[in-house]
Image (cartoon, rainbow, N blue to C red; front, side):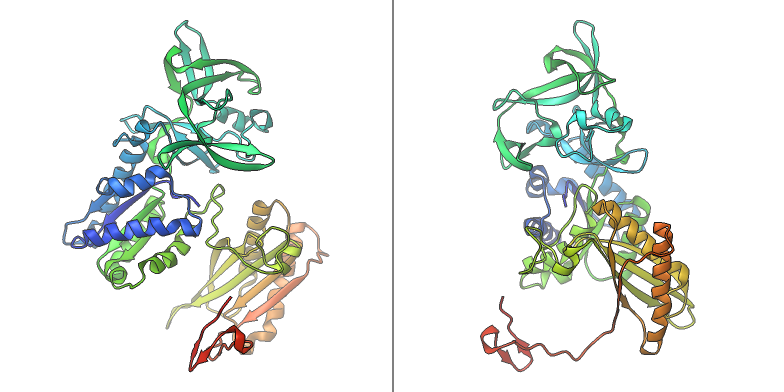
Length: 481
């Protein structure tokens, strides 16, 4: 996943140094979890952290959480979208992030210079989401063709064209798409594609130009216009800055584990603002002997929060001697497209008559990327017919969309079923089978179903297989790989 931007709300006003240490530690360790952090984002954390940090100084943090988070979001937009620190302009780079189209699909984009100061933003969009080559000839729909253009330009000779911003480099005459270009570690880099592989290589930036194409056939290049030959331009995709994902993450630093403040911040960021948030507690972070290890545990969750169709987050890899080919995967799961679903239940306490049924579906062969859904029902150890069908249908849809193929078998891990209800599992399996038949419009669906009832085991003792694999002293086992 990519952490394109972040902002900090520090409610621990007496722990400014601790907050900065936490942010620096998180970003440093994030690389080990496959989180991509643009160089500019790292520069902001190192040199301009105060410009993306709201230091709360009031006495009623719960009541003031909405205002504090709101101010933090505005700070992030000024720094990243409107380039108030001149970082992107100085480094000849664009702020890459995501936006949503009219179909609510996630689209990779770059914010175009010069940034507006009135709240509007010009975007350069990924015009071919399904093609890694960004080849205009490969576009398959009108929406993709419309996304190709970024500007309408007027040349000094009066001619007007629809064009896309491009970048010239010294290494090749081929013009580079801004989404294939970045500033990293003090130098410019561009993607080189060869034999189906993509690699970042160092290049020398010359300047911007405009590639003009036919509006009816974007595969036809009409002209290439240099930046100095443009008298005026307008953005093709001009939207409000709140429609762009920024910040990618809100870091909320709390003095203690006060639940009221935690709940309020989560409500404000996720439910009201629609932003991902990560909450840290100063007293917990400060007493850690190994702060990198603490950050690693947090980043495992953060990686999943940042995941989207462009950033397929993997916190770690499944390592197995029997992995299929070069793919990190679990052998049995990878042999055939396997829908792996884990289902759990949470019952209301006391007189509460409700039960929450939650399910997670694995989207990859290593069972490391997940999608989730949850449903409400009357209090019971047995999942209602409607809920179990909805779980299977939702999981099937997510798996198929991700892998572009239907499952050929299903593995269910069912938690929360008491011993006395084992026989009633047959009813749930029948409902699963019924859901498959409805999906496939075939009453004789024969997809194999493996249904595993999971129970907690608290008295497990792990010992080495033989003396060469570890030493057991009392209740401690050292495991070597």
